[in-house]
Picture 1 (spheres, rainbow, N blue to C red):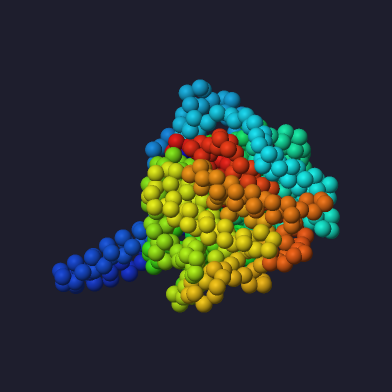
Picture 2: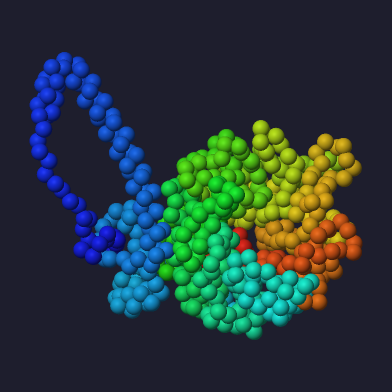
Amino acid sequence: MRKLYRSDSEGHLPFLVNPIAEKRTSLHLCRYWRSLARLQRFALLILLLFLFVICFIAAKGTVGVDSAYQLSKNIANGAEPIDMPPNNDKSAEEIAYKDSALLNQSRENSKSDEEKDDDVANRGKIQNLKHIKFRGAQNDKQKAVVEAFKHAWKGYKKYAWGHDHLKPVTKSYNDWFGLGLTIVDSLSTAIIMGLNDEFKEGRKWVAESLSFEKNRFVSFFETTIRVLGGLLSAYHLSGDQMFVHRAEDLGSRLAAAYATSSPIPYSDVSLTNREGRQPSWNTYCSLSEVTSVQLELRDLSRVTNNNTYEMLAFRTSEHIHKEGCREYDGLCSMFISPVTGRFKEQMIITMGARADSYYEYLLKQWLQTGKTIDWLKDDYNQSMAAMEKHLLRYTEPNNFAFVGEIISDNVYSSKMDHLACFIAGTLALGSLNGLPAKHIELAKDIAEGCHKMYETKTGLGPEIVYFNTDGSNAQDISIKHMDAHSLLRPEAIEAWFYLYRATGDKIYQQWGWEVFTAIESYAKLEHGYSSINNVKRIPVTYKDMMESFFLAETLKYLYLLFDDDKTDIPLDKYVFNTEGHPLPIYDH
């Protein structure tokens, strides 16, 4: 059934037509036309036909944008759909969606068995996914990581419960969005570790206390990957339908970000007022922010049988695909306008902050949709070849691989964000799925370079390093003072996890254990864990912040890295979002 939104209660537009007296201008036009030579008439007709075609093409494009704009506004405002006769045309304005979880349930109950089967076929079947019963820690290393999670959870529960982040030094809290980020971000980790008590505590808070009525704008990207992704993953791992209801409520609010004049969403969204905007300091969106919500919104569409979320998000991916990013062979600039849909002219090419997860989600969208959308795979392979050509370098004197950046005026920089270590894991994941064999060798090389980042006094990796490529320094890397802090990020550990799954080489477990030991030695406090100010100095000083991704990703990937038989979260059944939340793979 296709569904349209009526403009008034009768479904009619309020036109008012007044008769206009005929003017004699038409007689003059007729005489003028007859006075033209045959060749002049022909040329004029060709010109009019050309103008008509141009206007038609422009109008068609505008309809697509306006339709998506209206869809995002309608779903954000909770508009109720109206059934229309079946039609095979699946254009944007005919996408159906529901206005609430209760409406979904009542309609589902009224459907015949055949209709329910059709719904499942339309939204895609999960690939042979059975509900997993997690075993809990199986060895001493996993048990140590579980104890670290419990220690972090205990401190958070005591001093920051219901708030976004724990400040373990001052025994207080930080609110970034006011959405209890640490709770929602930790749910999937607690389930995987078999921590039923902690999961039940978090589940109770989500059901009874999580509120999206916040008088502030929040990051569309961060809220999607942390909160929406956390809720959906908790549903898939636990089977608890409550998480779907909360996810659908949040998704209907996040959809307001797509009310733009292009397929590019706004960076910020008000969950209460259901409206999007750009922050005052930047009229452009980050590439990673707008292209790293597709896994979550597609999954929301599949579990709610509501195609709108997937359609809105995938339009962005299709738009970037058509733009092509040709100047650097498939590597895209880091900023794009939600107004024009065009990239910023001053280009910065990086695998680090503001671009990173675009490349990650090219591969993971292809996997999530059962490897059925070939251009996602093709764009990913092209970008990896371009990364090797334009960004990959090797150090002097020890020949460690790293991924640098291209800054303005085509200048190469040997700067590498810790965030960019994700690419080693993504390459390894691709190799597990039949992509070019050379990718696993690239992954190994880059992962070794990331391990080099951790050769500091504390054994912790900094936020940013610079690699030496000209032999002028006896050291392969240098760390600037302003970049020496550690947020206890997960990307290197994540890469080693994928490489261990792909190769079985225990060197990656050894590297992970070294990092975990350093965390225990220098980041652990009486009431949790804290980011540190300088990885090169002992004794350390603290930033007084326990990031939610420390529980969502860092500890989760450590736990899974130490899973000797590699059975928890099989990678042919699940794909991790960029916040470490596993979501199921569908057949299309």
